[in-house]
Length: 50
Ligand SMILES: [Zn+2]
Image 1 (cartoon, protein in one colour):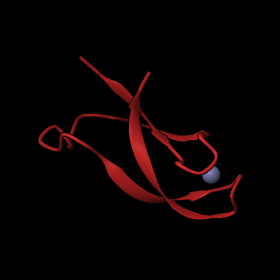
Image 2: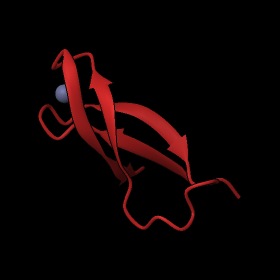
Image 3: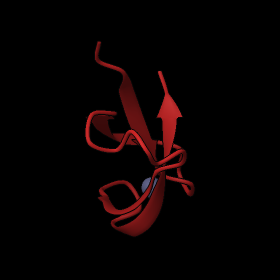
């Protein structure tokens, strides 16, 4: 079963990326440095459920 997660930018609250849990099962909280095109910089995106 596939569980989709969204990675949300903390500064503008846009959900810029979508991922699934396969591969990151053992990580309770996902935080990834990703480029936010709304802030036009890298921010630490946090996972959000759908
Ligand atoms: Zn942003």
